[in-house]
Length: 164
Length: 102
Image (cartoon, rainbow over all chains, first blue to last red; front, side, top):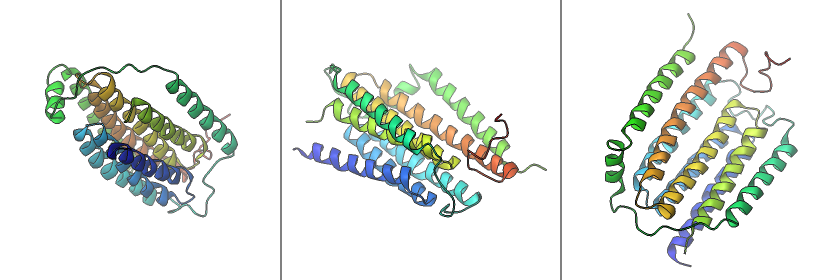
């Protein structure tokens, strides 16, 4: 076992354990806070995959912004921690069956496929390569995403504001 | 030695955790949390394929960045919809929001 493998299993354990808390906790605030270690586990996975820029963006947007946004909405709506209210619907057994079947299907599919590995290595400085790509071959995608971001944030403000 | 298999199995498990949350939670905010987990699982796949399948092209990481941006949009719009639903219906439990159900 090299250090890389040990790091992978440690990060996977963090990600899956906090994911189980997110999914199963009866306290909605615990679920929201458990999202932070889950997102930080994904950040570690990105670093293992040599995607440093993506890891930074993950910490800023997911672990920072989205978690805080979710906590704000929990506090703005009724119930607070939600401990007094039933948190799951009647579909628990069906949900377990569907999720387990989906996992079995995906994992057997992955195991039985011969993944070809391309030779070569990632660029030494991936943020630079990402920037060059966004302002070069992927310029249209970049501009389109910017417009979607602008429109959705304006829409979110209009939907969420109080009506006079 | 890590192979793409490790990452793909991990992401399949995270995806199914998110799917379970989406299927069984009553609270709209908790359903959004499940969707965020599923999007993260997809991102792990994209970055793993970038490293092992096509290391020369950066398309996997580019696509993962775009998915993160769109996930932020989705969270903002989804949470504002939940706030609007709470203002008019006094609940965020999705099985109680059944005005249009016959």
